[in-house]
Image 1 (cartoon, protein in one colour):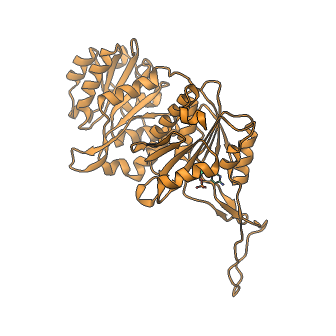
Image 2: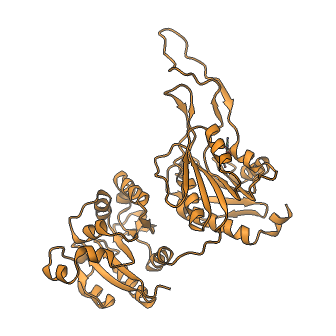
Image 3: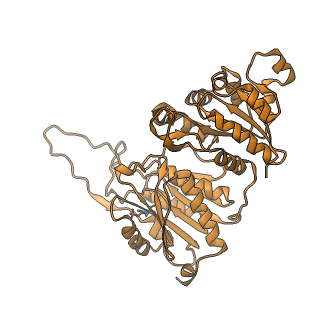
Length: 409
Ligand code: C5P
């Protein structure tokens, strides 16, 4: 699978560094060549000699070594590969990469490269969940850096939670999915994905909205695009960047979101992942509402927003072949979602638990059930990216072989 591919493996300092030795062995078994950059901290966990023996190449670690620079300058080192893999990637190296620092060979190579980068983080759970690391990871993802893991589990520091580096087999399959061009089973299909919250103006400065981050919807749009679909992402106000490889239309209100969906023209797939506000202010004012001393607080009259999902799912010649809705519930998740599928007239409902304890809103992970005419499928807890990829895979499968129950509906 990886014959002839050149991997530059950056090993930074973490107890998981020993797993990189196994990763090198597996990469070489698949025909890839591996060249290693070892950070100073990394060298406390694995020796240059073991990396050299397994990669059968010299190990680079010193930015100012005359021999290194004369044999292979750091710019060439950073570009003379098909893929850069950081395994393990420490919080420190991720921070330096996000900040664009070039204070050692690993950071310099990461700054100078024009090749894809895959990161396998490994750190203590508190370091992984720290706001600084979360922000750095977000920045790097926005720049197109690929991530694999970390996994949940017991850690060397006797704590439990996300932070364990992915296993070599998982890193290997992430490498393959970055390097080996995927099949494009959705080529020729047009999709609209709604994502994020909506913002309903009360006056020019105040609005009604919700906590949706848009992470799940954006991930679905990217996953459909990765399988070849031509995607329009209609996004409410979110802190995320526009994903590469698709068209993003940014909107505020539900009315604008519906208009943008309809303006996308004839589509085959609609995925409504946005958390659309059910109500808007009935009469938003053109001027800011003023607080008057002694006066009673104003009453806010609400009006119903259009139901975008139900509108797109309405039978007729314009109806997309597959309409997928989301059900965010805090109780009776599956029963409510089954009912919602009927009421909205959509084909599938992705039901997810958004009770505060689930950490779904704004979090990285999601536990969902896929509800279709064929029944209820409960998926394990997955990252939002993995939920998106699995859903996109199911969409592709649907177009190649709809289930009997669906065909009969
Ligand atoms: O009715 P409820 O908000 O629970 O339904 C959730 C599903 O309906 C989601 O797919 C959401 O994107 C969609 N929806 C919509 N327009 C609305 C309300 C919900 O598209 N006004």
